[in-house]
Image 1 (cartoon, rainbow over the protein chains, first blue to last red):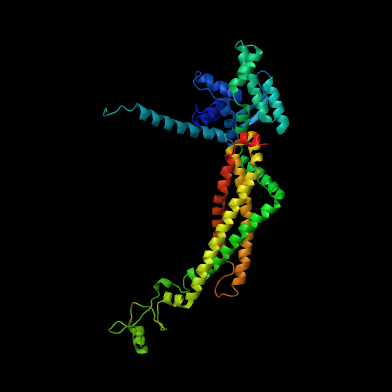
Image 2: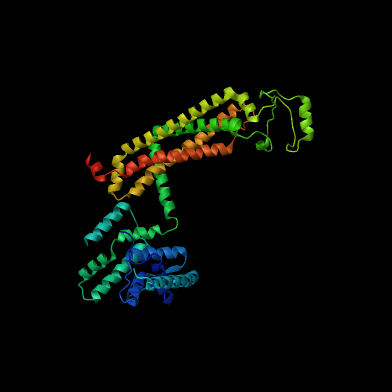
Length: 114
Length: 312
């Protein structure tokens, strides 16, 4: 099964970083939060969430600690590192530039109608 | 339940200890199950839905493992260990391939070193391209040679030439070729022999690897049936070929160094260890050798596991 294609590569990283900027969270919490905030539009497949979390951890943008969940179960909590915070700023800027550019292109009124 | 027992069985076979990742994924599924129960499903149905929603656990595990920076290296080490075991099991095969390659490379590098030293290298002057040969001819166009007085006059008055030396004046290439006419033919023959040796060595490598793949059809088929990917089979055969090539090339370089050292006793002006030449020969051999290995490797990757397992 290929990693979920419903999100652009890199977009998921951005969503995870942004979600973790609010508070440390476990994987389940991250996917739930993204789904809720986006009004069920963005559904993060677990098949891509956990590889992404591990990738970000190996890059040193997030770190993980074992803690207790709301229902008192051992769970792995992820939180942003200092590098991760910096990276989030860069990714946000990149995303802004990219989305503005795309929006400009697709909203452009055709000057000559074919 | 069924899925759980399958997982247990798999761990029994692969001896994979439940890692932190497994605990993490189990936690995720548990949370998902709880959410489904809260939504009104029965516990069994809630867990079933959670597992369906999660998708392939094994796939997620594998992909998460692959994020590790050293992941590629560890599979490489695995392949190398495996290849070494394979060689120890087939010592005769290994020796045959390495010897073939070593001879091919050794002969080629030695011959090329000689050619390079005697023919291809520039003449030993500062700027051989500016070297000219002068000649005189009479009105009818016959070459006459120049008198000493003419030469002295030229030496004093010429502005286009930095200097003038007299000799039995001919073009320098002519001089070289005249001097080496018979040697040139011999060198070309040697060259042809070298190319032939290379071709034979590569065909040998191809044949031996194909044979190896045929011998291991069943084993490779079993690996595929157990989930080895096409690329993994390809990498397996190529790594094995790569090790043979590396061994052959190392030995070949040693042989060529020894032979050129021997040959330099007979020839003047050839450096015994022409590192660049030997490196080039080894590189060429490695490239062509990998190509020769690629064909059997592809054949191995196209094995149909069902067919090989059926032919008991």
